[in-house]
Amino acid sequence: MKRILAVLLLLLAVMASGCSKKEVPAQEGAAAPDFTLSDLSGKQVQLSSLKGKVVLVNFWATWCPPCREEIPSMVKLNQIMQGKNFQMLAISIDEGGKQAVQEFFRQNGVTLPALLDTDGSVSRRYGTTGVPETFIVDGKGMIRKKVIGGVEWSSPEVVGYLEGLMQQK
Image (cartoon, rainbow, N blue to C red; front, side, top):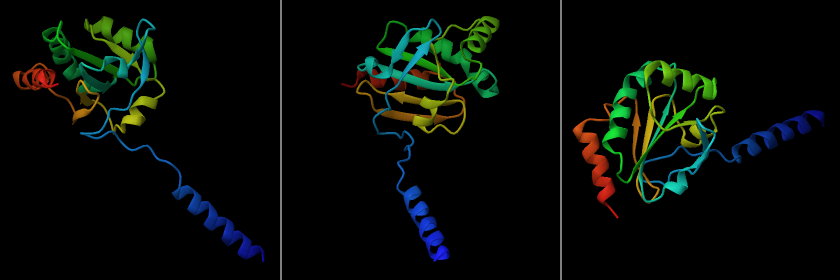
């Protein structure tokens, strides 16, 4: 009887684990998962409040060599897009949080709109597998492009692609 009960409990546990809800990674063509994160000044930034703009959501870390390589082109892209219907969100997954990012920015002369995802909750919702990983979100809040790895963000091809998205209604 104990053996039957043990087997029955084991089967119930296996069945229950199969029914648990799992996060589905963010995919191209799907709605971008909404989030609210703090920027370096402590201000809360919510993705859904940026509807109508093309948003480049970049997950990165100060300790990541490919991230460090692409940051100068992100700064340049942010300057090129200034005054346009565009918003860059550089989401740091550094466990050191605000202090680590501010120190990195200060040492490297970086000025980017950075958000802090120190507990990794937003990167998990997006299903990131590493850094850098970037999601380009259109004005309707849909993910148009997912990019894994570093990119030369200020290239004419990228700028043209982003400007093309801004033209779409």
